[in-house]
Structure formats: structure tokens, C-alpha cells
Image (tube, rainbow, N blue to C red; front, side):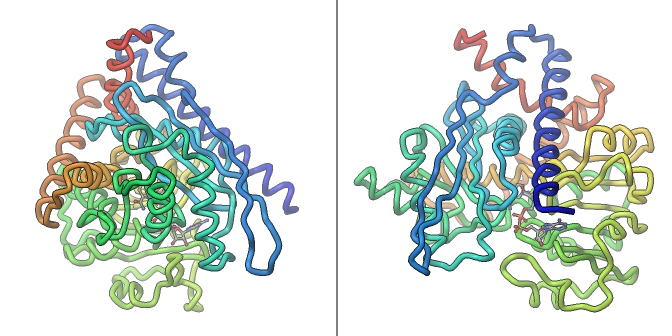
Length: 424
Ligand code: NAD
């Protein structure tokens, strides 16, 4: 396939993600009894900024990168959401992700609306210095619309605590005062929270614990396949392994490893690189497509979008699917899995642990008072268990699937805040 065709397919995928998000929001608002005007407000972000960032490269040339910052709805409070560095970032994707952040914040009952940012770049091919200059350039470009009480960024795909540190430093220099609350996911010494790095995987773990209870399965010895071995997937593999579950499959962008007797997770964690790659060290790797269809009890897509589609949904053998990644299952596939009795825990619930601990980090920054890891873990557990139960009960009460129930729960707070403010 030509490079142009690949780009076109990626753009189509992002547009589909955005359109399917709008479709479910429309249905959620209708079920909640809101008038059509509320959908008109919620269907698009309130603000979308596109920036061009010139970066001096190590070889003396200048490369101009395109970046975005989308702010979906700030009726509840400042917007909040990660910044993604990836070659496939697009305007439509960033818009959809910012809407999902509104939903996640609503589900976890955080005082935020949703935001998201991204830069079209490939950090795997950039030096440390180039990445720093790009990160600082991005903050300068978006500085007018972000801030601790306006819009608070965080890490996402291929961005980490070092990048957050550069961004926080740049923002603090611009404002001429220390501003740890401008961004979350920082290193601990710069005001990061205990437990932030593992928060998403912790949240997914709690959802798995709740889901197995509903299905009457024991987590001990349950067979789990995890697609993606990055921040979310690798910590999850560790937590599942520590809990006595059998991780029988993992994968990365290169391919998958599968062993029905269980993989050596500590060994794989030790060998993985900082981009979540490990399968390239093995000669018996299978494809990601093959891995998803292997027999298991719990399947966790923790990599990229559109992995479970109408094409393979009939062949998924897991009885529980927990979406750690954003948008891994299409609308058609969701319908097929539900019809087949698979318990699908949707992304906006399962991966809400990251933004929840980001909120805890921001609260600690604002207070200048820092909590021990145990306290963070306890507070996170409370939020995740309550959120899971609320959505499970909403699904039962309205006779809808968990995804629609999650959208109903997630959009309600922003819709109510917009109504009280007199916007609709
Ligand atoms: P990451 O960059 O740390 O890791 C991504 C992993 O996916 C890597 O192992 C990579 O090799 C693999 N991968 C990339 N392309 C792939 C492909 N085509 N097929 C299979 N595997 C592929 O990212 P992450 O932070 O772990 O995020 C993973 C997913 O979880 C994303 O959808 C992200 O939006 C979502 N998420 C992450 C967080 C978080 O706090 N990290 C929070 C919420 C949601």
C-alpha cells in the first residue's frame, strides 16, 4: 500500500471514531431526556487550536511540526487531557479524544471538562534535545489557552514525565512563577503524585476485579491476553501476574507472544524497551490479529484504536473484554460482542484511572501538601469501584449496554452544568 493510501485510511479511521462518538453522545443525551440543543453543544469541542511549531533539529535544519489542542466543554471546570506525540495524530482524533475526556471526568466525578492535545511527530526517531525543543515550542504555541485553572495537559501515547517536566518548566518561565498545577504526570520531585505512573493500569485492574465478580469467574488462574505492552499494558501484565492470574498473551506494534501455560511476565518486563517493544526479540511471535482471537477468559486491548471490528468480533473467545486503550472496539463490534453475551467494560470507564490520579496530583499541587501512595491507591479504588457499579446499574436499569450506560453517566455532569449556566 502506498504512503498516501495509508494516510488516507488513517484519516478515515479517525473520522469514523469521531462520528461514532457523536452517534453515542446523541443517543445518551436522548435517553437522559435532553433537548436537541444540548446535543448541538456537545457534539463538537468548544475550542480547537491548530499550531505550527518550528524546531531546530540536531543537523542544523528547521522542521515545522503541526500540533493541536482541543477543549470540549468547560462548563464543569477547567478542561483536562493528555498530549499525544505520534505520526498518526489528526485533528479528528484529537477532537474525539477531548470528548472522551469529558466523559471520563464525568464518570469519575472530577471537577473538569475534557481536553486533549497532540503533535504529528515520531518521537522514536528524534533525539532528546529535539524532543525538548518540540515540547517547549508546543507550550509556547498554546500558552494563551492553557493553565492550572483553564486547561491542564498530561501524558498520553509516547509522552512521559520528562516531557511533562519540560512543559511545566516552559510554562512557569512564561508566567514568571512556579506552576506545578499547569500539567500532571510530572516526576515526583517536581510535584508529581505517588501512583500516577501506574494509575491507568491500577484502574483497569480494579475494573477486571469487578467484572470477574459479575461473571462469577475467579481472577486466580484466569487466562488473560493483553494487546500492547506500553505504560498501560505492561503495568497491567505485572498486576495481573502478581494477582495470580495467568497472562497467556501480550503484544506490541511488532507482533504477539502466546503461551497457553502462561508467559514469563517478569522476564518480558525486564526486556521491554521504553517504547513498549519486546516481541522483536523472539522468533515465534504471532500477529496481533491472531493473538486477539486466541482462547482466553479476559481480553484487554491496551494499544490502539479499532482493533476489534465487525470482521473479528465473532471470533473473540474471551467472555470479558476490558478496554484499556481508547476506542479499540468499533460500534458494530460492540453490538456483536453484546449479542454474544461478552461483558464489555468500555474505555471511558476502564481507563479513567489515569485522569483520576492526575486530578489527585493537581489537588496536591494546589494544596502544596502531598499524599502517600497508600492514600492515593485507596482514593483511586473508591472512585473506580463506584464508577463501575454506577455504570453497571445504569446499564441494567435502562436496559442498555455498558458503553451507552457509560456515555449517559459521563455526559450528564457537563450537560447539567451547561444547563445551570444557562448555555442551553
Ligand atoms: P504506550 O505508547 O506506552 O504503549 C503503546 C503500546 O502499544 C506499545 O507496546 C506499542 O508497541 C503498542 N502498539 C503500538 N501500535 C500497535 C499496533 N498497531 N498493534 C499492536 N500494538 C501496538 O501507550 P500507553 O500509554 O500504554 O497507551 C495505550 C493505550 O491506552 C492508548 O490507547 C492510550 O490512549 C490509552 N490510555 C493510556 C493512558 C495512560 O495513562 N498511559 C490513560 C488512558 C488511556
